[in-house]
Structures are given as structure tokens and as C-alpha cells.
Image (cartoon, rainbow, N blue to C red; front, side):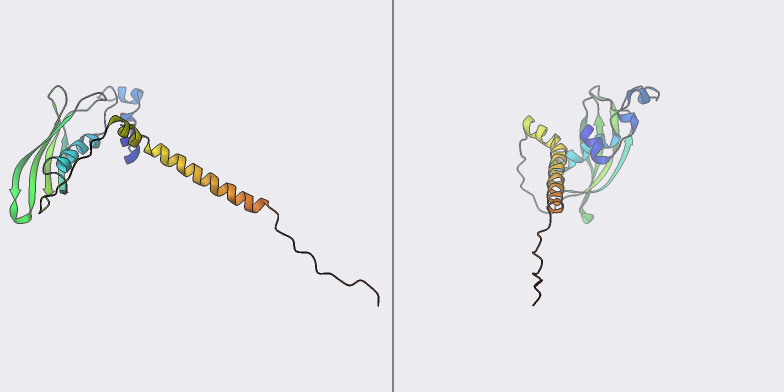
Length: 174
């Protein structure tokens, strides 16, 4: 969740500050609503209609808070096929582990005109760990690059310029 909040720059204290959240109607930190909405996007982009579809529109209504530790299930259902516009309208819903609706809405999708063959990669826990640490890796690489740059720049600046011998002057009195 921290990676999601950081990636969208949503640092609302309602999502991370227990003291702040305790003073709200929720009583404790809640998950950003757009994280829950992104679960709908994941279903549409990977399952129904699947790879190659393009999101055209989405309406959302957040009906209950999602708390950290909740298990959320996203479901989509075809509501209408708009063949003449190559669009499909879906009913969208997310429910928590108690079966309570936490999000509902509609999505309009532009499905691909031809079937797309796509093999889903199976990602193990090690790959997820690697992905979650990617921003730290990028930061380390940036620090390493800047350190190399400044070390080279300093070395070039600190090394005295080569001096050419002064032209010989004839000091003899002829």
C-alpha cells in the first residue's frame, strides 16, 4: 500500500496517521479509494474483457471504507454491448470479506477488435518483493550515478592543469 500511496503522491493523513484518522468518522486509517478502484481496472484488463481493452469511462461510488487488512474482491458484469460503437458497458462492484459492498459503479470499455493471445506470467513472491523494492533500487542507482559524476567532476577540477614550460628567453648580453 505504501508503494501505491507513494506512486500517486496521495499523502492524505487519513491513510497513514492513526491519530489523525481516529478523529474522523472512520476511527482508523483507511485505504485510498483509488486503490480499490484499481482492482476493477485489473479485472477488466486481465479477465473480462481482458488484455488489449481500453478504458473509456468509469463512474464510482465509494459506499463503505476499506480498512488495512480487509480482503477486497472486485467483480464486473456485462450490462450492455454497444456493437455499433465497439463498446461494452460493465457494472462494477467491490466487496469486502464480510460481503459488504465498498464500491459500485459502471465502466465503459473499448474491447480489441481481434482476439489477443496473451500468456499471463506467473509471478512468485520473490518477484513481487523485487518489484516492491524497485523504487529503492532506482534511488540507489541515482545516488551511485550522481556520486560518480561529482567524483569525476571534482577530480577534473582538483587536478592542476598541465603547465607548459615558459618560452626560453635569451638573457645573454651579446
